[in-house]
Length: 144
Image: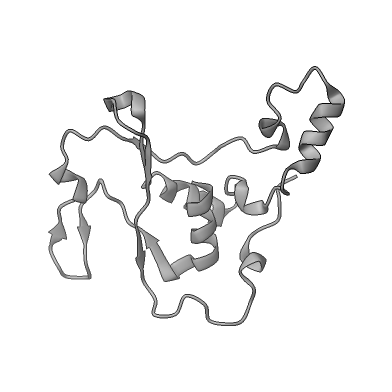
């Protein structure tokens, strides 16, 4: 979901996260198309999540009893990037949170299969970038 949220933040209106569970219309005036998942009626899935915990502490499991080992482990980790955090509580963040429910989480315990994450994007604009702004400058800062 963090990657999907970052893509929606960076590309904005140029892409659309396709809702695989509800009927869609290809363009104005055309009839509704059946949702793609109707051909898989037995597929068990869960909607994407819009909030998750992201901290350095999550990557240092089992090192609580040795502070030096924990600090060494933290020092070896790559930096946490703003795109690793859930979307903010502003209007844009709330919009992205609502769209993340369109992702599908197929969990192994639900139907004795492997685990999968599905997100389908549709390109809405012929140009994804309109200027030479670096990609990382479109991502909001790390929440405090």
